[in-house]
Length: 263
Image (cartoon, rainbow, N blue to C red):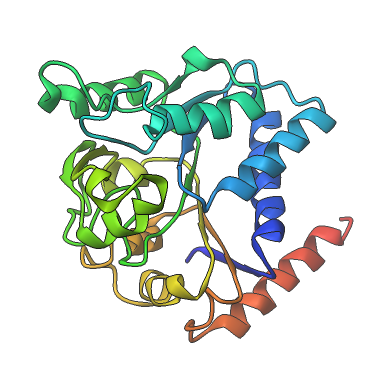
């Protein structure tokens, strides 16, 4: 079962999540990060950037792999995930740009891009810790409902709801790409640790289905139940439909009490 942490707001979530990532990087300066985009992880990246500066954490050896990329959008486009990762992660954290990668969404033989990306992750030794969000329809990465639980990096058609959710980043819905290349659910499960974030009442149904419903391709985020080391950090609104929310709060308080005890 995932460790489920219910917090007040995104700022507190960012602080909690950033501490997990900071500890990992301090313990292993060559950490391989799995990086998500969108608004959900922004408070985590901001808090981690502060920790890097204030605690003088060495990130020169850190490598990163983005979850996904739009198909047909050139890397220099401001809304390509290459550009977003550069703005929101590489520059604020001071990572080495050529040690951070996104799937190839353009170029020749694009159908080979998924296998190429899988090979790059394997060559790097695998992802140590992966940050995730969850869509209102339960998707993680761009693994839409119906995705194979064993899937690897590949080209996928975007659901219309996902395109509508992402239209705020573009001038109009028509400008949102229809396809993407995304790490698969099987790829995500191979990361050594997962940290999933969710905020807002519009995520409550997806969170409840992913954490307390059956593991199913209908709710791709439910694969987190199959991971041995997963942490879920959500605000009160996103937790509103969890049947066992009070137990999760109790378990988190108990864990904090244990951490405070000197053995």
